Image (cartoon, rainbow, N blue to C red; front, side, top):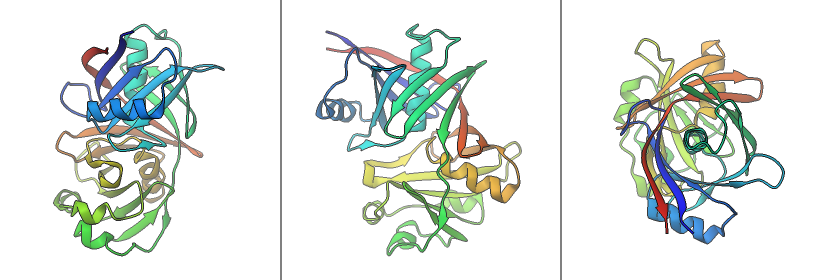
Length: 263
């Protein structure tokens, strides 16, 4: 049976920008080895696999080309976009996903999609051996949550100058590393980049789940609960964030660039 599969650019309103994700629509769950092979074939930072839930909504899993991960924002945004665009889900209905990080929801807000994700605040931490040398930065703050390290540097120029030593960075025991600073451009509150060579992704173009750490971090420093983050990757992309207690609302747009079938 042919299985629908899509490539969607997330956190952008134009093709070939933002973060591309694979989205695979399944009638029934598949074995992890099969999903890992498909993700490796797609060779995108993440491929999402969606199947009907036995209770309500959908089961959702995410795979990089190397490993299954616990949380992914841009592939969830892409999945919600495909559900509504394909008519699998009525555009007036919210999408409900059962994941390894609990139940996540997505709702349409005009041309935007809002994701309800758990906040993942960081706590100040000593940098592990090799982290600073691998990034070549002098951070003003280092923090850690269950997934990633977060390093604040002085300026967007410092964020842009990071040239990681990826083999060294892959030796750090964390999913990835966020480098961030206050923004200098109007309409943007903070900027960031995200590196995850240990998970098979050197630099991720736009990382929704990283904003689950960035939102509470910058909310405390800027004194506001609603912000815009800009990820300074080569493709670039923007994420609207709103901190609501222990949840982060991530807002973005998405564009389908490819529709196909697995045979």
